[in-house]
View 1 (cartoon, rainbow, N blue to C red):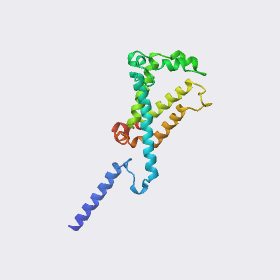
View 2: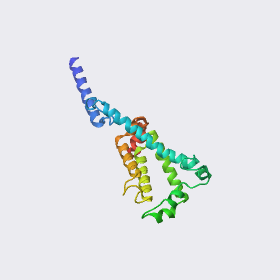
View 3: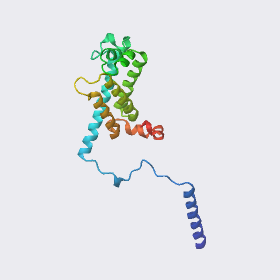
Length: 204
């Protein structure tokens, strides 16, 4: 009986070895050993929440620009010039403020329907993504592109040889994406756990 039990145990062990060889268990990519994660100090927490507040603030800048230009809320856009009332979100700025080497190009597209739609959808999409803390890579790329293009409308800037708030905002966007600012005061953690996002990391 003892010999039979020993033989049975050996066969079970060999069976498990063969199964592990044919069906290897891959490590969980999301598992992090607790011993390699340093506890967050006060400075780290302050930096994390500051980045989150800056993300929300910058998202609101984009979102408010969309709302004001769409409905003419009276801040930078009068009601009569609202997009919903037939106004053009791009015509005034591109037709009258453009200055520098790209003036002719911007004058040629000022008020074009495709330019209006691209501009407004960009403002809305970037604003919503930043406020929610999701799709931050795409939002960062689109935001940087939009801000750099807006910077080229007026060259050189009025109060500096080359630097203005558009380039500062663009750099801030890149920094916030690199810091993963959507995880704090945002839906970044939930978003990155979605199966489609786990499969396609460019959606992070």
